[in-house]
Length: 570
DNA sequence: GGACGGTGAAACTTCAGGTTGCCTC
DNA sequence: GAAGTTTCACCGTCC
Image 1 (cartoon, rainbow, N blue to C red):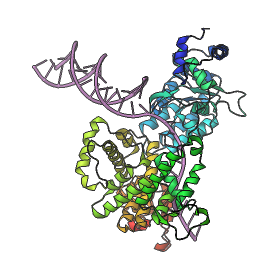
Image 2: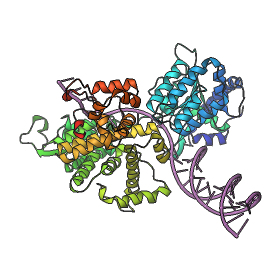
Image 3: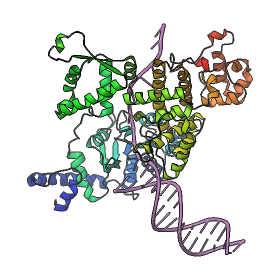
Image 4: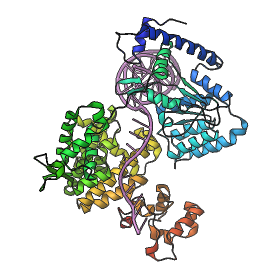
């Protein structure tokens, strides 16, 4: 074994920041001995793993399969999860006895969406070999299918991003952390100890294995020692409060006021004095300054009012300028909607503009895309720049937000918000998931997340329009909300009221001249069965209950019940 | 001489994840 | 910062 030398020390400092002076050589020597002993033990074990392929990860996976065990392979990007799974799948064979199960699972995964995307095809291919990849870009159905099959032992290996380190309970005999670096704010950096330990925690299945193995892959020999020190011997990072971050602070401040938890500067300051932030940073002066700034903004935006109290309460006797802070009706709603007050303020500005000038779906979509909640926005590539700018020029009249100056820092973000809005435009124009993936590089799972946020923000916009009595806009936004949810053109709205009918079935019906509930009633069972299949046709007919009166037509209990009467659209 | 295809260097692009809100008698 | 993807210049071949 090599001794601990100066070069090693220098390399180590890259893993954890440490002052070069005041070194404890004795302690380092002890650690050195300890590391060597562990390394020796591990090398003996690892040597038992046959080197069949050039790739260490593949060898470990093959060894796991030989042992009839399961493994999770953690990597740092979605693309790498897919590629690693694919490479492994190419190298493994399967038992004939499992073929049927795997083929059926592969089929299920391939057809999880109305039309398979390249991602579906890739995953279906891997699954045939009992290998899978798992990340946030997968459709919900596919994620669940992979997780279930892993629990049942049908899937043996999952290559994943940290999705599987948190939340999901999926233990495996072996955990292989292939990538320990990831792109962050400061370029590529070591991932937090806390996260790696979370991954380690997946190793070993209670009731199945006596032990679990967690393995980190070092890319160079020099990395080994650093990894050992940082991730095995090292302490997890400290947790820091983010309360003083402006978007966070203004959101919580408004909600504290709206719920009546605090009602004066004095009670506000005394509340924040007791928070983890104050405990950690002791700098109340800075926090108070930020609070004052936020209060001024909330007041300017009409979310709170501050007035001198007519009477002086016993609590505020000592304060000569006793004031009373409370949330306005608008402020209370913003707090309930749990959106950033800045987002709410900007939406309100846009809504006011929409009363004065023409507004379309693109107007409202761009409005919700240029918010902190929707971040990160889609990146505008160099070659797309011109195209997006052209859209901006062409549809300038439609945008509800003022366009930033060309050289303003916000200009690029504005273009990104337009691109994100254009993706939603394609979605509500009934473009497929595959189209969205190809054109915008947005995977089905990522689209689902963005859709969810859009739904929330459109609902918030609808509610704000309601409070502000902008009646003209309420219906427009509500319609758009349903269209974003289903990814459908406006003409399909009447049919989407039916249960079991999404955009695909609604489009089939519409193209066959069945365009509203009345048409569904008129349609004969044979035609309907040919279009939708017998079971669904029966279900649909039942919903329009022809034996009942029109009022009793069963309409889908929509997720957004109470907020809009969908009947208005038909 | 021009069209076409192959090749490799250079330029460009992208990079984890998750929660919040509504429902209603 | 690194890996993957796209673009582009260059060269050889064929018609």
